[in-house]
Image (tube, rainbow over all chains, first blue to last red; front, side):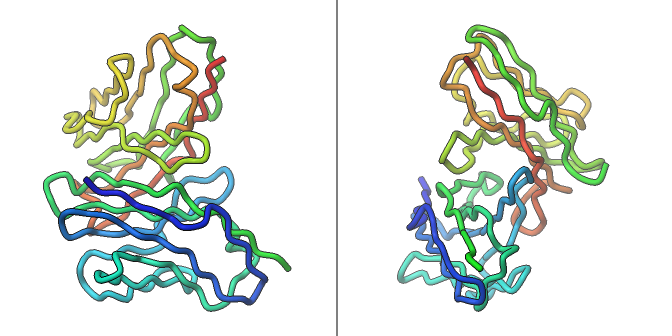
Length: 115
Length: 116
């Protein structure tokens, strides 16, 4: 079985500050890892994904995440927050087995950006 | 269409009523997924279609839940005899071929179901 833990249900940063959203996973097989963003009244959008290539993954809007197997982590970062980054962020894991189409999501982290 | 479309956007049902939620995936997309998102939780997998074939329904919570995609395009999620615990946002997603690892998964905005 696989699971995802997102530390902090709510993170608040100032505009221009570093964004760090934490995600730890549990998986019995090599995982595939994803970050999704959900803006109000919109569908989930893929920010970035790790599928066993480079451990540092770059996504849209200057977000990036690093896969650290030893720490079972896949934290999301952005050097400088913009007001438009305010949204809910979900980390998700899939596996390399037969049901790799199935995503297991964390509970989400709501990011607030203060002016 | 331009994206995945779900209707209705909001649905209020009395306990015991049957409801039907519709998903129009992006034209030509082979794979279609349904997820359930309870308040304060992440989405949870319900079921997966490849064209008209329902390949995985392991996430459906009970036999009151039924999904179909008869012509391999539009899908309907039906919930019979709704209960309060069914209150959630139901998300539909589609992808071009048969996987999510090497391509993008497109989500709709969801149907928010409230059972009174």
